[in-house]
Image (tube, rainbow, N blue to C red; front, side, top):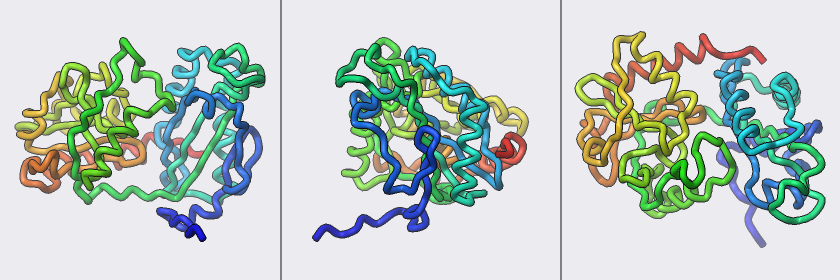
Length: 301
């Protein structure tokens, strides 16, 4: 007999999930096998985090969702107000207020027949909201990473500015990290410069300054952009540049940014300690700045 899988958080066994206007128990939340996300990974998504009843940077996330849908020529896209209403309904049905991460997915929708051609999508988009109890776990736990052999997408092939569900290269990089027994993988661009990890953006600290890769092949993450913009408010300069693996290994500090993982210090990459192999002063300042911004920039939902 197959054993029941263990959930990371047992509370999520009974969550309710939004699918196209219905809030359903986890095991009843289904989509069609003809949906584009099943047929070809044809969907866009956002990760949202709920803090004390407020969703952090909600409008920025929804604007990115709309931009991605526009680039992919989706039709009958729900409005931001419609999605906010769906979020409220979903959170209320789950009685959720804090320590919640939501996966918001918008697919091209169901097809009338199997195939890649978007002309077969005649039902409108599919909207899915998966809310889960997921408290941040990396604020003080240092990450161990490897450098992946898998390269991040270049705009010549698939622009990473589209926040799409076609994530196989990221998944392959994470598989390498899993086999190596570490937390994640640094992905390089086609020229060998740092891009991002398989799921987060990268910052290095050197001589009191922040450095982050150009957003050529990486997603210009919402938390990334905010930290880069607001760092000067706490007296820290942030510079975008091409960064090599050597600069990563010899950095004083390193951290990653993302909605789910927040500001996560990196202690080791490819067996090399980063700095002293502990959370540094600048990383701690950025963590405090992030928590301040969470309070200021959350939208009551």
